[in-house]
Length: 485
Image (cartoon, rainbow, N blue to C red; front, side, top):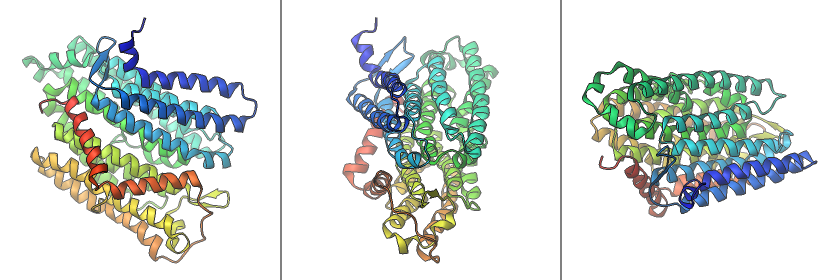
């Protein structure tokens, strides 16, 4: 029998699980398919909000199921960010999916199940819990990547994501089994104790297990050289699905990576730091250069996301509480910017036809100055122009890296940031200075609300009651994960 203490720890996850089951039944027994999709989508948004409130109301640090599942300031911060991302993504879905005849009840149910997996990943304190949460998320994401079955690009995106995702999951599971064989436990605390023994510093099995697990996680966050699925899946999947992929799942995988390295393997930090530094540099450099020649804005944002993963990993490479806090701040700002950018992509519509080429934005400032201004603010923020939020995101990851003496990593990151500014500023130039293309259809309310909220956040982040609150919450979360460092 589950007691009240366990129930309070699991409340956000229980709300999502029960909500998904109830909404599935509502959808199945509602005859009108489009009406069912619309009503279930609104109810799913309510379920996500309730789960967010439940996560916000939690306090303290508690473990359940023999330490396999943990709730603390770190998990609460990331769960709230993930739930906000899921809520705003569903809010952007109505108009696009309604026009494409894809607004069916299965989609919001799958989003709830994927989000449930993400929350389990964030709270995983054991290799088995890690894998269960990861696969629950992944199975739902495989389906929604190919949700538009009539579009060959969507089907291709789903197939690529499934094949490569299954490969990465197998590698992660293989690495976890090696770690279990070497340390004799799946618990992070026991793995940390075993890894701290003097003879473990040269144990080849521990190194192999660490490498395989990190490879599996690198795929989930789309870090180089395990990024190959990202541009094709981002371009091929329906745009609301791409917005979901770019935000919440990446946050969950990064959270899992943070807890795995900091809680399970702090004793072998020099080993995993080398791997993190390599994939950070590779991701920043590839993200900076590969996006330059892109003409499709979704592919450009895909390569941009790879670069931003590299920037976030700079904070992890510092291996300190300050660096971990920097990663959390970066993730929160990244989600806000990314959702706003994809809301702008969803507003690129002429009649019933959505367009994705950057050239379609030509002269946008003359036909819709508000739209152009919002997108310009987001591009400036992505580029790290002060005083917008994107500048502070990079500030909070580079500063701990410099304090940790990682000067080459910091210099490469700053140079990559300058190079990547080219393709962000190019979009601004096209919108404000090129000859106008055909005007877009009128903006739709829900999508515009996400655009406006995102742009407002990037502007007012500099204010203490916004940015200060995020920084304080992230610092408390980081201290809970890496106390005394």
